[in-house]
Length: 468
Image 1 (cartoon, rainbow, N blue to C red):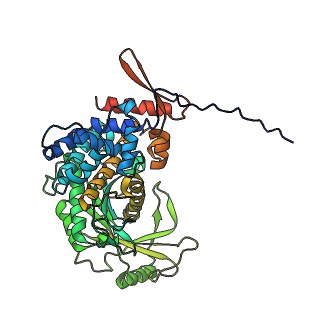
Image 2: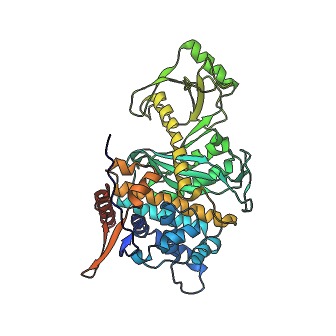
């Protein structure tokens, strides 16, 4: 029989001094200042004040974004997170001031200026080391999601296509595969009954997403062909496959890769390809063959005259996973999907299989949306429509701060750079530390027993060094 050691009782007392929890949130807050996000938002909202302010609007906006990234899901929670750390990071605005910023100051007239402020901060972040690899394609993924309203009294909340009640925002992310994450470029808050394939909404979000890119990375359809320019591709599911949106992409100088419905014409093309044994093995991201999946091009088998010149139709068939229910469009026990793209042959390695792999990676947008919902979007806390649109911008800014922090500070630490937001909060943002003051200096001493203490301290220094 084993002896059970009795643990010594821990004496608990409320007399600790200089201790601060969630110390990593200060790194995001400092990053907001160093990228100029705080100053840019202050300039954008300065005309909403009649006199001098006690707390600059950009400072309040940055506090909101950092706290939302740390896990706050409403303004009261933001105020509590910030107020509990005033002894460490200085006085913060009251809950009323934060509410006023969202309810009154960031209105429909000032939202474009806030978006421009976020774009200016992105320029600074990319110049400091968060930029994508030069020469690579930029992939913008657009998708919509539902945000449920449990109160039934928010402006713009209506019945949705899933028979729920809430809003239906349309979002655009820049895929950043080097950290298995993405940057939140743009978001359009819409009513719950907004259509999934509304071309005008996709065109608006595309324009906002391109404006959110640094000027040197934006596509220019009128540029000199001898001047190198990043190539941008927009990826959507079948909801984005409209003729107007495809034409808008062509006008903006970006490529497209849209899901395509498997209709009778596509099914006939599948039968023809089966008879001719024209399928080729699909590939994985690492370059190996994908077991049980094949791809083929059906551009010459289906009329695409109504689409922009150069549009190609790519098909994919795959064995459904065990337990999956077959659909009416599946052929011979194979699940068939299709997409269209205007990328010419020879541009993407792997030919047709490479194009299919690139389009399949659009599925990562679901991960971006899931993380954004865990970073403020799961709950729209205001009653007014434009106040909730302002909250959406704060959530997008919070997601960007986390992404830039990973790219600049943790790129060489995959365990932190590629972690889900819940894990990143636990390991980095929620770390405990102690505030000490000596020789006219304030020091933040991160818990030395914390497994990731050294990586956090190193990342903080990398961020400060990157911005000079």
